Image (cartoon, helix red, strand yellow):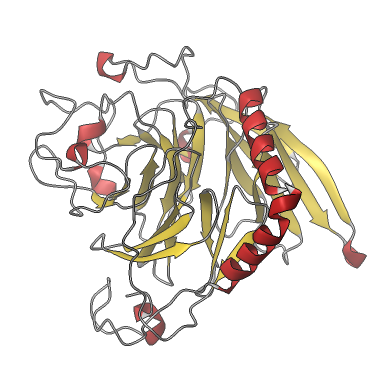
Length: 403
């Protein structure tokens, strides 16, 4: 099962790298005539690899992170893999997690700062997004590179053993998006780091000033995440639900004006980055939407989930869309995927079960009709509905099209 496939930059769209549930990182080269040649670059032993990070503008360098807690660095020129470090749990009594028996953090996400590619962040089965500086790594292995340069986490989640990070993304202004399992999405600027070690002085793991501790995921509430002192608060994005699978998160728009995410309810959610206002909800999948990926140069969005197809979304309609009234009303699930699956084999059994349901002969026509309808669903925008943009000042029409 492939979790991610992406083109390497400046490769004429002929070099593709992938990661998968078997822990393998592979390179595929599209040759003249359409032939595809693949090579194994590296592997995370007995571990799924959900995400790769590609160094912006570099056709040779990428990183991987796995559920074994290991972060690896790859150079396609030599096809060599370098183990940088194993992400260790933070040693603090407030971070007790009864379901984790390993001394490392199962990693789900990795992202590189677009503005400063020396910096990258990782996140996984605890509450902290960790920031690293590759310039501190000694390639002869003489330094301990496992210590982060900084940590990021909403203060009310510090010590919360019931959440973890499933998605990370950097904007072109070095802002860091962090998507939490069974919680919300948060936006951090560089000055919001907790330092190292990441424990501010406060009396309770749940901040009294935080509204996030009082609102269930899947509901719409105010879009502020107050810190202990009411300052330096991370912007929060609410309405979706991230519980069943490992979901990514992304910026959207030519200047990263919007935030997009999938949801357990099979929808795509889009918020204004600056205000946190939910402006668009789109039906995209019968089950779960895991991934939303923006086109690098134009206003288009790709989405994928449990279904076997990929959908492409582009602005087309001229009428303003309205938000559905049943946001947060989810179909009951047998169990969550992220924490309640005992093993990768258990995960595969559930996936095969879903596939059998989908390929049932009695539902083939229904599936076909629904797929056709979903492909025809397009972002419904009003190009003139918003006079102001998230960045302030005058904007082009395509920037206002999501308002």
